Image (cartoon, rainbow, N blue to C red; front, top):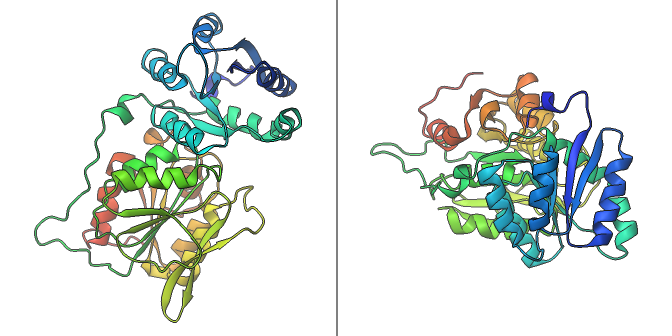
Length: 361
C-alpha cells in the first residue's frame, strides 16, 4: 500500500485474534496512537471476513492459530482475493515460528512475537514496536501470492568457460521488512560454489534458526544460523541469529564469524551496519554488498563505508521491494553501484563474481 493512501488520515486496522485479552490490549495500544485506529475486532477468520468487507482496512493484524479456519488458509484466500497488508502475531514456539515463516511466504508483511509472562504488561511493553510494525505494513507494497507460490527457484550455473574469478570475495547482505522472501529468491538462485555469504535479516530471535533451516532446504549452498567463530568457506551462507550482531573477524589470515550481544545499532540487533562495517574494515575490494527490501536506513552508512573501502555494491530496485527504505537510503548516500530488480539480483551478482561486469568506481 502506498504511503499516499494513508496520508492525511488515520491508519485503519482490523484486529483478528481468538483471545479476548489480546484483542482488548491490541485495541488499546492502537487506539492510543495518534495516527491509527481499530475499525473492527474479530475472534476468528470467519468473523473477520465480514468485518474486512465492511471496513476496508489499511492493515490487518492476524493471529496464526485460530478456531473455525486455519490462519494460513485465511491468509492465502485473503491475498488471492483482496491483497491487504497483514501483520502476523505469533507465539514464541518452534511450531509458531515455522507457521509465521510460512505466513511470510504467503504474503504477510511482517511478524511480531507475542510476549511471554504477564500478557497484559508484556503487550503494553510492545506498544511502540507494534505501532511501528503497523506503520510499516501500511506503507508496504503488497506482493501477490503468485510471486511466492508459483516460483521454483533453480540455482544459476556458470556457462561453459565461465568460472568465478573473484574466489576471495565475501558477499554481505542486509534486509528487513519483506526480506525473508527476497532472501529466499536471491539465495536459492546462487550456485553451490558461490563465495561465502553472510546475512543480517531483522527478525525475532526465535525465528532465525527456523528461517535458516527453511533456506537450507531450497538453496544449493549450505545455510546455517551463524554461531561464533565459524571459519568462512565458499558454498556456505551464515544467517545472523536474532539475538546477536554478526560481523567478520580475522585470525591468522583466516576469516571467521563473530557474534556479539552488544547494544542495538539503529535500534536493531542484529544490525546490518555492524556486518557492513566489518566488511569495509577487513575486506575492502574483496567485499560484495547487497541491500534488499526493508524499512529504515540500517545498512546505508555501512554500505557507503564499504564502497569507500573498495567494495562493489548492489541495491534492490523500488518496484520489487515490499518497502523501499533501506535500499533507497543506501542509493541516496551514493553507496550503491547497481540498482537491480530482485529477480535479476543473483544473476547480476554472479556476473560480477565471474568478471563479466567492470567495476564502476
